[in-house]
Structures are given as structure tokens and as C-alpha cells.
Image 1 (cartoon, helix red, strand yellow):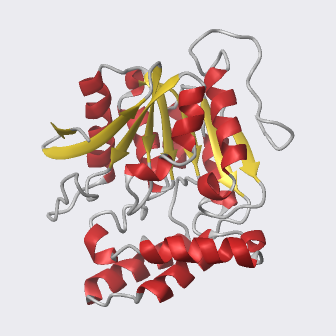
Image 2: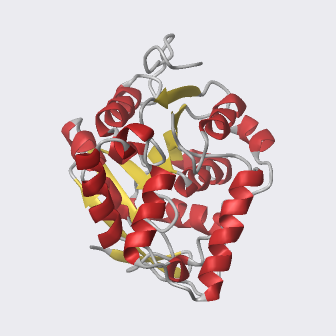
Length: 286
């Protein structure tokens, strides 16, 4: 796993496959390997090289205990793209990673050919603010949730009613969540970064093709917040993936992967002029 010093910090990343690069930026507390199971194979099979990133605050990238900002994270991704000589390239961001990618596009538009923004937002509403503040309070308290309780909470927050009602699937998810339970104190630097002011007006300056994916039963970033981002970006396409919660890219990977591959291989997203805008099925909105 290569580690490179970028923007004053050590940043860990992985490269998979060969072809035009797709850089993938994940969400709060999550390592880059979260993309390996489903998205990396699908994008490799479609002929892309996939670059996954461990954001600052996620080992083996630097923890940066002194704190950092969204601008720092966007500069990290920009620096990695430049280090790899990959720009302009396709970029994917999930949750906090989506907000990072939005700021990257605004700050360094020449580095991004097209973008997919999953479960993202452009402002912190009352519920998002309450959740972020509660998580920061928990992290600062030094209290560590028992892994089984953390798994239960994660399942409630992140999965769809369909999965919660499927006992066999749910047992598997609870096992995964228990094994991979995150100590909030260890990712304290990322907590609260979604407490952003209303950035929606700024997104009117985004000019690259964007696909915005919402997840129907997402309780962490409700789909209406994600749709607001699509409404704010000129020409963006919004698609809502049914039957999944916040971890839609893991819960409904076939639908998410099809949307990614179809979008990134369409003429507009590839940087080829076309009179036909890409659409992702009946639930899309131009």
C-alpha cells in the first residue's frame, strides 16, 4: 500500500487495474478498502484503473490530531491526483467524501473530468447537526460503546427496512459491524466536518458532469438533502437507489455499480461532446 506525503501529511492509497483512473473518496471513519468488495471489481471490469484513498485521520494515513478541515481533505485528493498524473479524472465521493469532492471540484476544476456524488449533502440541517454534535460529545467523553451495541446502532442507522427484516442477512451485517466497529475517538478529526454552512449556492459554479445518487432509506443523509445537491449543480442528474440505507453502495451494489459504469462510460462523462445527456433509468431527474 503506497504512502505519499501530500499537503503536509502522509496519505495512503491503493491502485487497482489499468485504464482511465477513477479516484474514490469514502466517508467518515471509513478506510479506502470499503470499495474493494463491490465497486473496485465492477470498475476494473469496465476498463478503469481504480484509486482508493485512506483519508487523513484513517490509518495508515496520518491521524492529524491537531485537526483539519474540508479544504485540507480536498487538497489531499487534489495532491494525490497530481502525484499520480491522473488529472483530469473521474472522481467518486460517498457521504463526507461527497462533500470533499464537491469542494475539490470548486477549488480545482481542472482536475475533475466528471463526478459521482453518493449520499452527499450541501448543508447541515437540524438532524445532521444533532447527529454530528452527539458523536463528537461521545468521542470526547472517552466512553467506548461495546462492539455489539455499536453494531446494533450502526444497523439501525445504515440499513434499509428490507435488510433489517431479513434475519439471515441481518445476522451477517451485525457480525460485520461488530468486527469493524469504529472507535469514534480514533476518528475525532473527521467528526463534525459535515457541519457545513449552506454551500448549495456555491455549487452553481460546478461545470463538470455530475451524477448524484441518493439512497431511499438513508437516515444519516436523507435523500432530500442529496437531491438538493443535484438541484444546485447545473446539468446534474439525480438518481435514487431504492431499497437501501446509508450503505447503499454495499447493500445494493449491483444497482450502484451499474449507475457508476453507465455514467462514466457515457460520452459526456468521458469528456466527449454529445447531444444526448446520460440518464440512469426511470428514477433519474435531469
